[in-house]
Image: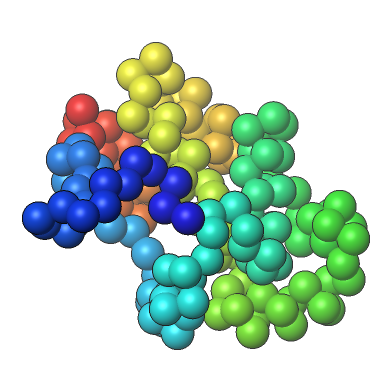
Length: 158
């Protein structure tokens, strides 16, 4: 269940995080927080990878599309690939406290942060590979999300 080494019958119970991870900025929306708080007891007991929510399915699909094609498909295309009607998908996303736009933003910024952590990618490459058509709009989006320019964010995580 824990997907990591577990030592039973120890004097102390706990867990730890890599210092690099703890120092990263927290970037979550109020809607994501509300959803997590509403579902956290159940989510903490769910096996990783066993999430059958439409939110998770859309996110996995979008990550694969962004990584392979460098684009995020429309909601209609995504629904078609997931074999679900747009109406049913919207209803289920709403019930889960999410939206297609929120998932797209989350996926895009996960990829952006991952790439900015890698100095082999230039800011222009990160912008292009995360689906932005203009570097300026990419920079504004990163600043809005993190409070930092892409270069400042890269420096803060290195």
